[in-house]
Image (cartoon, rainbow, N blue to C red; front, side, top):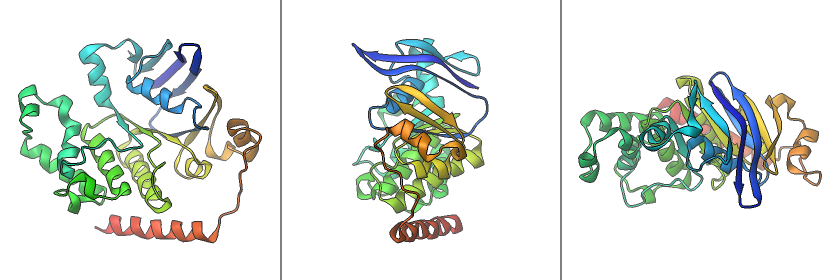
Length: 272
């Protein structure tokens, strides 16, 4: 069980996250929405311990995450994998080597220095790439792939850690709509098939409604909504994004075509 109790992060006089509290008592896919600057990324970084909370407490299955230091902190980060908007791959390395970097915390310093990987790790990395529909790109440099493919490599690297939680910080913000749907469906499949908790920062309401079991809305560092996608009404969305926000329920023909193309791509991946 993941529990946040009045978790706060301040930067000088600025409050980035203000007394955030919620409980997740079973693995689910959670979307965190809100405007830029609402505190979404800072919240995930505190969960992963990339940044320290100023006050409050984060616990997972009884472990006080906010108190972890040194090796214990690094062990937690291997159990709570992070996926970033800009992929954070090593561009000149091949795809499979980037995926294998997900196992660095489990390897000795000597093997890390000489880039030595056991055969079983290499086979596992390729299996994960196969699962995500990009195994044929394993020998290519990461920089040769499209944005959507690079993000799937980043997801594969996270899976290589065999984490209990996957945090995705704006994973589709830099992707076109078709690749965005492929990436979101990949994350949804990981949740459903592996039973892993997935928490993703998202910009669009439609994405949160379509892929998530639960949606948390943030505004000015505070949680102002926590409920199911069905409870995320247009009026509630205006509470999250501001009264001047414009939310259309209409779906354009271009959006429909993009969605259909994404579904076809996903079907092709599943058939491989």
